[in-house]
Amino acid sequence: MHKKCTEIFFFEFFSINLVNVITMRKNSIDTIFALSTFYGPSAIAIIRISGPGSLKIAKKLCKIKIMKDRFAHLLNIYDHQSNIIDKALVIYFKSPKSFTGEDLIEIQTHGSVAIIKKLIEELSKLPYARPAKPGELSKRAFLNGKGDMLYFEGINNLIKSETENQRLIASKQIFGKDANKCLLWRQKIIEILAFVDAEIEFGDEIEKLQYSYVKNNIEKICKEIEKACKSFLTVRNLVHGSRVLIIGPTNAGKSTFFNFLLQNDRMIVSPKEGTTTDQSDQSIDLLGEKVIITDTAGIRNTKNEIESLGVKKTILSIKTSQKIIIVLSPDSLIKNNLEKVKRVMGSVEFKNSVIIFNKSDLKNSKQKFKEWKIKIPVIKNFKSITISCKNNTKNIKLLKKCQQFLYDNLLSVDTNTDDYYFSELRQFECLKSILKNLERANLKLDSLEILAKYLRDALTDIDELYGKHDDEDKLEIIFNKFCIGK
Ligand SMILES: Nc1nc2c(ncn2[C@@H]2O[C@H](COP(=O)(O)OP(=O)(O)OP(=O)(O)O)[C@@H](O)[C@H]2O)c(=O)[nH]1
Ligand SMILES: [Mg+2]
Image 1 (cartoon, helix red, strand yellow):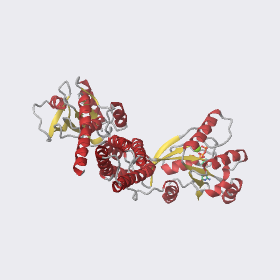
Image 2: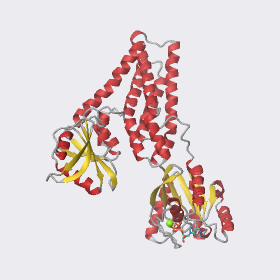
Image 3: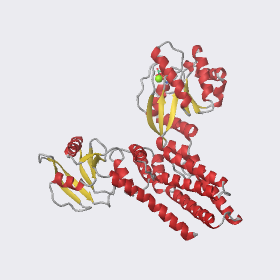
Image 4: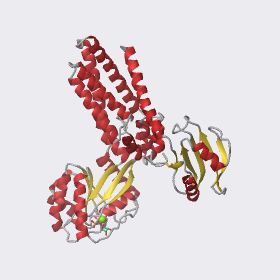
């Protein structure tokens, strides 16, 4: 049985790569180029050229006849009129030992915007080269078997990471257990399948002992996948950022608090009610986590047409948001607002929401906050913090206190306990499908053919998780989310 499993495993494993190679041949005809570093003044900029024509292009640009593989050449780069553009380091990576698996040239120029523009312009003039689409270099690397889809998605997240937790998760996606776990699931399913196939061939029922072997192993994998699915939302929020909506009555200090968290006067603040009429998103680093905060139009009944549209937008966003900061202040407790605010507070009671009692510097603040609680009793059920933003916009101690409060009560994620780091919706859909097929298989232990079918379907889902696609459009969609030049 063991030998059979190993044979099937290797057959399946190589068939994945075979599909990749076939797809690769169809795609890698063009030579493509892209800026792989930041577009802006910096010490150096790296432009990559990949594809069969890349060496020819490099020789033409540098006016040389021979270029050594994996050697840093310090060369002049010329334009089509033989004027020097820059002196640059040029490295030739001969196929297949390059990032993309194709012939690849890296040109490291000085990081000036004008040089980058000029070089891209020169490359664009060549009839046999074209600019790369976002993620196209990675896509070619994937198709040439330089890594599976989980690996490239992890690298993409690492490049985009802004906070320490994002970096940690991305590095676990690349170097951690996820990929190995999927391989183990795959191997185990192949083992079970080989066993079931043998039973189909030689007998028609699974013996008692082997029955529990199949059942136990399927259930064990199911439990692990369930755990991975459970941690998905947390990991996704960590990698792509949690969204937090700031709401409250007009004039409570929502925009002031938004600017305070941002440490930047991004929003207009004024004593006039209805100052903010639209929404604004900003990304912040909240104690190591990426959070996208949204300032909104204050909740009130208004005759102003534009503001009224803003309020409607706020109400709509509340319905779709899970994490909410409600800002209340002593002077925003107004009769004509009360019912509207009360309704909104009721609708977010069971969401992940907290209250900021702002303007504690105002004379009657304590009394007014008590009144808020009497008039809207549900307020008592929220976690809250009382602060004053006035003259405190640069108060780092207060900022840290607010950050900690929000982190503990809105985010509170544990990055250490879970072994699973799936963050992409695509991965989640694959996991759910593997789980569904294994659960179906587990219900059909008495019907060997049907059991085998579900196990095969689960294997197809695992292959999809690794990125085995015959569907060119699907691949295009996945890699399109990557950065240009990657
Ligand atoms: N006294 C006092 N005033 C504050 C405090 N925070 C904000 N303000 C003032 O309150 C007024 C309203 O602040 P905003 O931040 O514009 O309020 P808002 O909730 O965004 O209001 P809308 O956009 O109209 O819904 C401004 O004049 C702020 O300077 C505070 O802690 N104490
Ligand atoms: Mg505002």
